[in-house]
Length: 92
Image 1 (cartoon, helix red, strand yellow):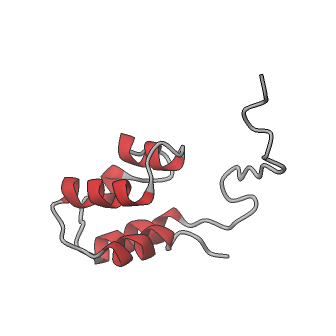
Image 2 (cartoon, helix red, strand yellow; image 1 turned 45 degrees about the vertical axis):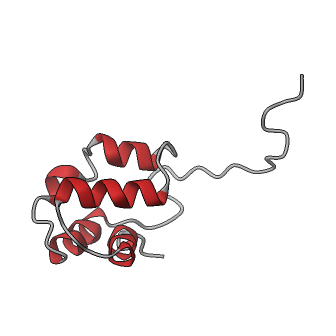
Image 3 (cartoon, rainbow, N blue to C red; image 1 turned 135 degrees about the vertical axis):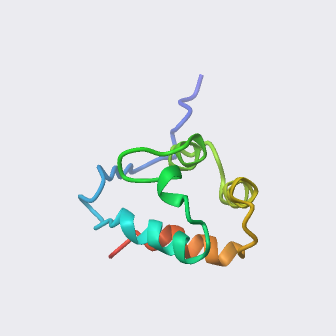
């Protein structure tokens, strides 16, 4: 039996703000600016809903995340706006 991950040469782990500076409040503000007033209750540095857990652990791809976020918020923002708001936390 061949190893499952034989083609993986490197693994990089970021323990939250060690390799990349992260500001979770910037993402919260970006989504609030897009009209999702309760975003802070859905996602923060200290807690998050299952949707965000699934995204951050690789159990949800980008299109699924975007569609689910649109559904749960009832907000009709574009995919590009969602991606930009999500990435707002990345400072580097």
